[in-house]
Every structure is written in C-alpha cells, then in structure tokens.
Amino acid sequence: MSRNPLNDLAGLGDYLREQRQSHSLSLRQLSELVGISNPYLSQIERGLKRPSAEILQQLAKGLEVSAETLYVKAGILDEHPVPVAPTPTVRDAIAADPDLTDRQKVTLIDVYDSFVRADAKP
Image 1 (spheres, rainbow, N blue to C red):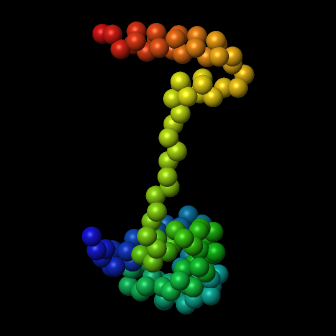
Image 2: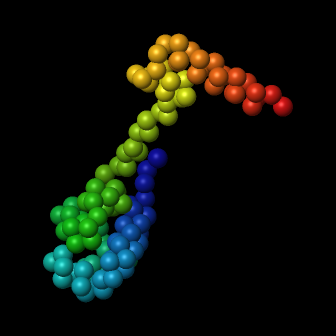
C-alpha cells in the first residue's frame, strides 16, 4: 500500500507544532534555536515543505525528541513496531522459580489448576 507523502508532511507538521507548543516556544524562538528561517519552519509545520534529514535532526535536538520519530513522521523511515515479549504464565513462573522444590512446584500448580477449574465452572 503506497503512502501519500502529503499526509506524511501534514502529520509531521502537526507533531512539530504540538512539540513546539508543549515546550512553550514560538515559531520564531524554535527557528532561531535550530538555525532555520522562521518562514521555512512555518511551511514545514503547515505541511508545505519536506525538510531534509539534517533539518529534522536539528529540530529533534531543539525539541528534545528522537530524530527517528521525526524521520518516521516525515516518511523517511518506516515505523517498526516494538516486539512485545510474551507474558509468562503462572505455570511458567512457578516452574522457573529457583527457590521452590520440585514438590512445592507440583503442589502450587495443583492449587492453581484447582482455582482455574473452579472459575471455569458456571
């Protein structure tokens, strides 16, 4: 599925504006902080201009956000979801506990199973 680059720019601009405002910076203050012109920054925020990776890096530094986030918002990088580690089960936790003896583990799992079976009955 192809992405619309104008949507990327509008999303980037909205994000930059929100970050700038949350840092209580005017457009002029941020432009001076990162070393770009006020009109150019305004065009970026309105989604009219696509900033270079270097400009995004400067904006990230000035707004104290990750440059990678801005690259994703600008469509330069694809967003990679963070893999979620599987949640260990109660049985896994009991089995992995080094402080329990084998007999204690079996007993705890039996008790746990009895509770689970009791909850499953209507």
